[in-house]
Length: 203
Image: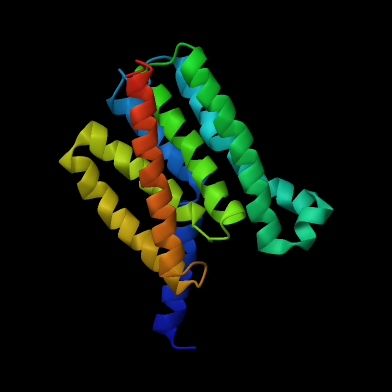
């Protein structure tokens, strides 16, 4: 194999691994906790959002190796388990955001994640359209970074999105259509969450 091609494949794999949904969610929460204390204002909000938006969804990766029926199905089994755990944990995060006294901004973020997984399930399971959860999970933090940091959020987020788009295509994990569908799913989730949170007075 051409050394340059081999290096590109390795780079794509690394980019994919460090940008999995739980990592992106943890990065978003950590940055907001550090620089936007009005959004993540208490230790309990920080820990609960990390638990339900990052740690519990991340459990799909080790559990997929421990559960024989999931392990036998390989990547698809891991993907389905990730959907199940994400649905459960994002629902819990949403309930806490709405009912648990979180800040309006953090409740909005939890609502975006909740609607995102619902739309992904609609696309992937009901409509048979394979939308990339990876692209969806990257788009959400970028949107929120733009909301809270303006141009700086776009300056950091757009190159990251481009790198992940390239890595997913180069590694053969997704097609451009699947990545764009995942992006559209998150954009739709954000708009729905924005409407819901404004209608209910959360923000």
